[in-house]
Image (cartoon, rainbow over all chains, first blue to last red; front, top):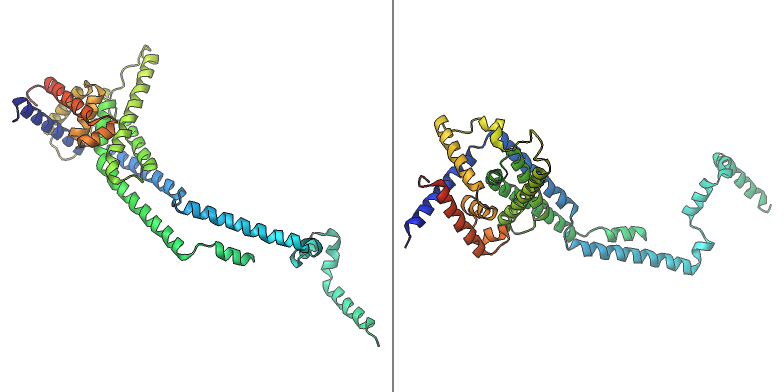
Length: 129
Length: 205
């Protein structure tokens, strides 16, 4: 059973709530605009946070993939080293780099056609008649 | 060799689909967050304004609370957002009050350093609100000023309990979560707040 005080308290709660809600409903345009800006700033923060974060399951998966890739590359090079290919035979791509990097051979490179024809003449001369 | 490695390193289809799914989920979450913040922002502002007595400060506090929630707790279940948001808001209000107390202690003796309450003049307060008539506006403002004055005289915890339960409509458990106290404490604070308000506001309320 409700006492008079309880009834009065209920009325007071109701009235204070009504006044509060009316005040909230009568907020001016400037305040509403500022609140909207504040909300957009918060949503931007959430978007940026989400953009940085990756799915949780992807983190271990990407770590495992990176480790596997490193292991494969290391294995590949260790095999090359053990077979001695790297020391004795450089790959064609590396030879090109050496030629381009050598400053002395720049003139030679400019007359490639001439040296090509010279090669063919030399080859013709060396053939047994 | 390296072509093979590159091909094997690219994500297979199920992984790509999972990332797209995660992006959709993020968009949904942002939309839910927007909806939630829009639903609480006005009341939160009014509650903060009761405590700090300054519209600009209250707006800053609400913005801080929104950003904190959006940055740190978007992954929490949506039903937890409301109490979490009000916990952050209450913490921000408390921090503001502490800073103000320190500032008043340090500089309160200086001449011309009057209270910076908004009663001293917020220009936007004089702008008419929505569709209430002038006399109704006046009555409303008078009632709100009386209520705010009574609320400000309450101890902080009672004020929080009353605002969260009565204005924001949180239940006892949610209020306890927001106030970081037991449900029993919430009931005690609320009951005392109601009795004190009844004494201060009189029979007309």
